[in-house]
Length: 140
Image 1 (tube, rainbow, N blue to C red):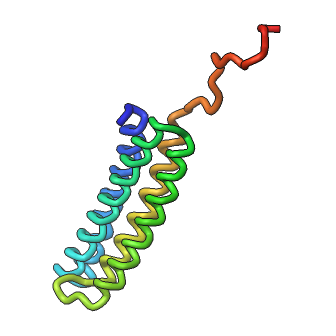
Image 2 (tube, rainbow, N blue to C red; image 1 turned 90 degrees about the vertical axis):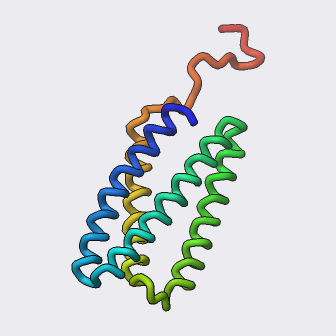
Image 3 (cartoon, rainbow, N blue to C red; image 1 turned 30 degrees about the vertical axis):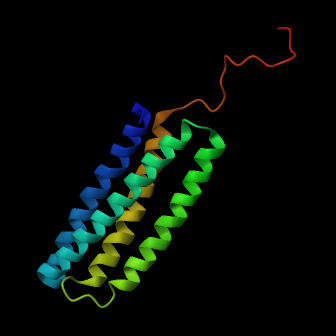
């Protein structure tokens, strides 16, 4: 993982954890310990999914831009499908509050996405290489 990727990861993970803790506190007030537990599990799922996705995309970016885009789209698709399966399978859970899990997952996902977008915007990466030589041009 390059330094830029770590900066984006920090820019997304820190706000997500902070907002997730607020969601867990609200869930604890509204639903007690099962609510807090559900919110924490939802937060952990979001942080794990998106961290793995960012690592996969960072690795694929070293191979080629097309591989990076493919990895990004496929990891997003897998995350959405697995999250939907988790939400459906946990809807009747009794050990924790499923609604708190769902709300924490939704709020965490939105927070992570906004943090990741903000992190990428702050990187100021060049989208064109100014030192590239164009084949067939003789410098004129």
